[in-house]
Image: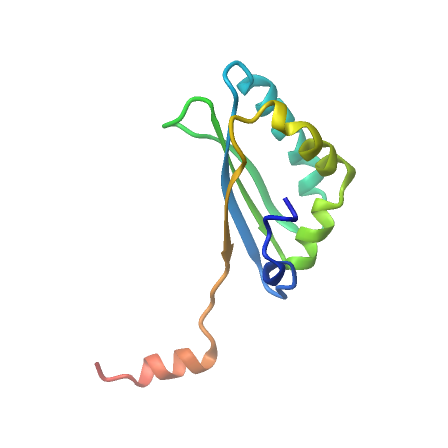
Length: 123
């Protein structure tokens, strides 16, 4: 996954989130789901991970969705270096129909300057 995480996100000092989908090969959904669920507990124990959740995609039966929220980019790098993550990526191709679909989100919050401009706007 580190090769698909933008270097700018890895150096982010603010929160970064990912959501995505893992499309299981035919007959592999149960095993893939078990493997992904097993990543949850150790991942949530990492200090830089704020949210790490696995979801069932109600519109695609063989698709497993996930959502991850990190305190900062360094937490992503640390997470990807964990032995259980390396093991998952090393042999997950046998279970996946295609590459993971991952979308990165960088949290945006208004700055005081933005707030001041908005409150003085007369539009």
